[in-house]
Image (cartoon, rainbow, N blue to C red; front, top):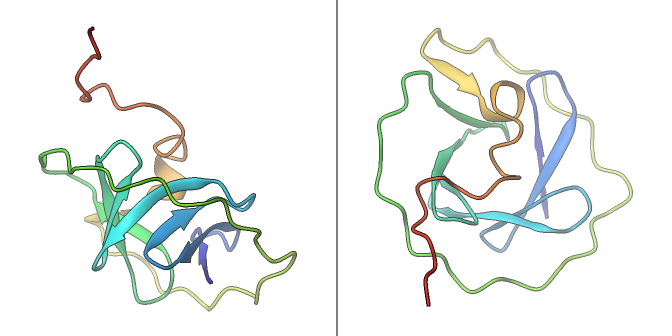
Length: 116
């Protein structure tokens, strides 16, 4: 399990076997390489080398991705290592967990309605 931090140093998530989990072990999204997607298939950003999820300030629209099978809930550790010292972000990048913390909590407005 790899901890993910916000720029302010808070532990905000975990990456485990290609899936993104909150600090309670609930599934939040997944990774495709370095790209991070919400559980609705919406592009959230990319995983930086210093364990933050960042994205470009002017987000380009991307197609929704097909959502993989929901993984089992994990049991996160009670403690994680201290965050690394973060460098300043370039003007064109933002920390997703600081600028848009609710991104992983809501259902995307772009997801089509289910009608039966």
